Structures are given as C-alpha cells and as structure tokens.
Length: 219
Image (tube, rainbow, N blue to C red):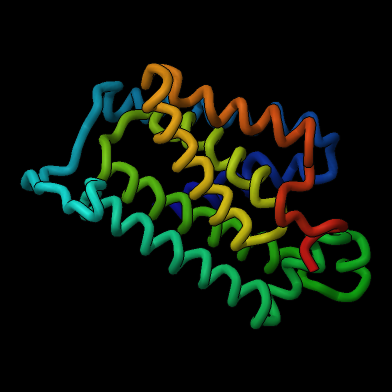
C-alpha cells in the first residue's frame, strides 16, 4: 500500500513538476504532506492507536533498559542500510542511481533509463518509510503527526553523517539519539527535540557537508 501511495504521488504530483523550479516542488511536497495527514484524520481519526500486543518487560544491559521493539529497530536499521549500500555499490541500477544523483543531464545522455531510476527510487523510499513507520508504531504509538518530529531528526542525522554516505547517516542517527537521551539528564524532557534543531543549526554553520560527507555527490 505504501509503495502504491508513493508511486501515485510521483505520477500525479511530482512528474508534472519535474522540470519546474525546485521551490515549486518544495511547496508541492509540503502541501502533499498536509493532504495525506488530513486524509488519515478523515478516515481513521486523530486519536492515537497502538498495536494490540501484550505488555513486555524491557531487557537490561549494563544498567540500561532496552525493549525488544527497540532492538528490532536497531537490527532493522543495520540490515536496511546494508542492503541499500549493496544496491548502490554492487548493482547496475545502483550505479545508475548514483550517476543520476551526480549529474542528471549527463546520465540521460549516456542512455540511463530515467523512468526505471525514478521507479526504483520511489519503491525503495516507500518500502523504507513503511517499515520505519511500523517499527516506530511498535515502539510508541500511531497518529497522523507521528512522522514530523522524526523527519527533523532524520534530516539532522544526514547533516551530521554527510549526504551521500549511507554509513555516515547511520552514525549520525546514533549520535542524535545518544545526544538527545544524554541531554534529557540535564534539561527537561520537553526540550528533547531542541537538541536535533541545535545540531542542525551547528552543522550548517560549522560543517555543512557533514562529518563523513562526500564532496560532489555520491561516488
């Protein structure tokens, strides 16, 4: 279902705007996000929902409590990022994706099938987003706004790790998560999301390419 929604977004919204100004695409993305969230509210309501799973005690490692869903999230992140790394580096389609990321016009001239590349990107993004939503809901709950805060944190993780570096993004995510939870010990938990915004602000000022950033695109 998530893949179908993603492909529909590309067909009805992004494909007609593909040659437009990037600002127009950004505005369309914001409008589409509000449309989807309010559609969820219309059909399923705004109340939080959870999976009907039995309560389970967390596991303790060296004085740190971690739940089974959280362990599953960590293992899934490593598996998904490993699969993405292999796709980008070991497959013909992955090399096409990297070429298009570097220079779309040159990639088209060289004969790369842009329709297949676009389809692959949307399928991968939809699968990752759908699995991420399921895992997040297992750990917390489901509501129409559940992805907003995590979107900011994902952006911060990419900024820290560096755009174009798959394992850098994983390291950035670990850094953001550890920084947030350590920060809670010194400030109110209500300001937990402030740490992500502070990291974004600092990285844009100090090192916009990220710690492990690749200059000139994905190579």
